Length: 297
Image (spheres, one colour):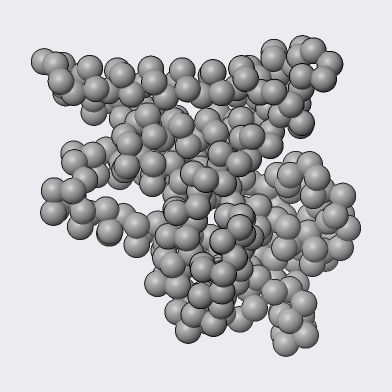
């Protein structure tokens, strides 16, 4: 039943992603803003954030265990469904990416930057001064967000149930929206640990769902040698290898296909989105096999 709930939550969440609402991130950012009154010199001690995280995980985990062991065990199904729908999703991306592709086709670099600059990390917005740099930063961020808001949540849900899904998603939210930049580093380290295995699993999935020969070119170096490589860099490099026609290499695409350059922005993002969709299909097939074998219930 867990597989069917996950599949239903994924379908519902994909339908809701067309909303312009920022979803959980906007609400979580508003709540965390109330914690901005830390004493001077103590901004880097996000104790309250870890209390919020542990409280949510323990509360949902205890509720899940209590329901599953009692006569109301059937209520674990709606609990899982509600948690997954709330934790999954990337609302607010579809329309800006569409407008970005149209602006790229017109050759309007300023409009392209305007439509997507709010989607980039704050520290990266000043680096996107040239269209090719902007596209690389946007593609890397898009892959990272889809990974953290879908694949990471699903991985920990399969392992630990709704408590795992909440723990993974709230860790990412705390890293991104903790009101004091000095206090985000502990959450970054936590997300790095939570993402280490699923990021490498998704990297392998890129090879299965994309160009396996191209992915194999640097797979060993990416997966084994760079053990400290963060998920964003690892997945971008893996996707670049798994995609053909220089979909994530604007410099080489411009040199090889100058006549098709106006369509590059939209084509590249479509290629990335298709690769992520195929990778999710691979994961769903794998989870279906686990469900058939009784390992995922």
